Length: 129
Image 1 (cartoon, rainbow, N blue to C red):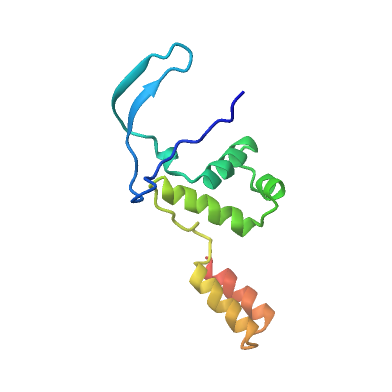
Image 2: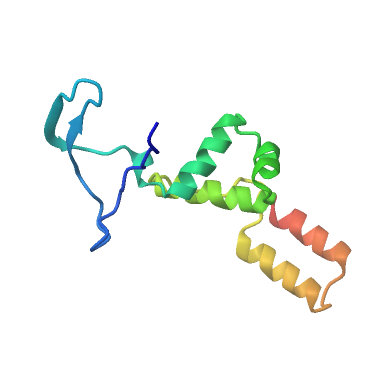
């Protein structure tokens, strides 16, 4: 069986989204021409499609995604957030999640020795509530 090629979503010359104008049946060669709107999923890069396939295969179990792809929890969340945004949805932080810039400020203060580890934990808990 010949290797399957993925749909190209962006124009290689200018980067704009491509429009599908012809569909063809590989079995009987019937063709349909017109202007078709691609699905939101065709906006995803090949890497995002692979990640999403893994995510679905393991039924959304983030620990399994971590294990299969050999990546950390924050990396899984980051990739999932990027996919959500690419699909056109807004990514809202979880209610108990510390905003990234606040987390970074707390961890930077800890690294500079301005606060203790216990104080950093306390601030992270407060920032997330």
